[in-house]
Image 1 (spheres, helix red, strand yellow):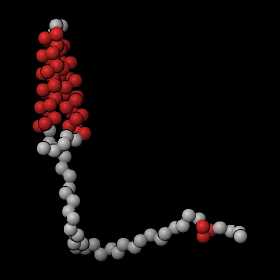
Image 2 (image 1 turned 90 degrees about the horizontal axis):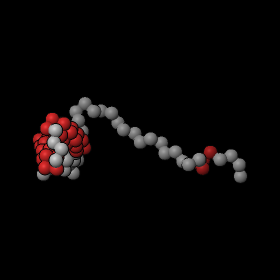
Image 3 (image 1 turned 180 degrees about the vertical axis):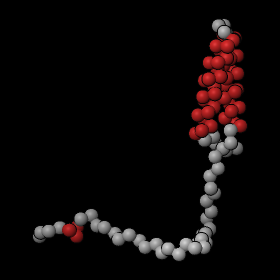
Image 4 (image 1 turned 120 degrees about the horizontal axis):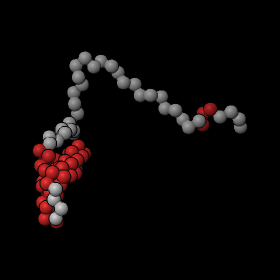
Length: 92
């Protein structure tokens, strides 16, 4: 099982808060059993949304060297190394 990503955490948390608030407002629960039931229902809904949300796919890194792409004829030249100013001093 993969670890949840940031979007799954965000959507799941938002659903928990909004579903719990909506259930409390719609049912008008004032006693501890009603409030607890609304909280548990909101939590279950949030977990359901986070679990069923598709996870983002990341490209898999391979250890082997990849062949150059066809048509990529550009030659990469390393940039000139610049010193820390030692070569630009003027004086003894």
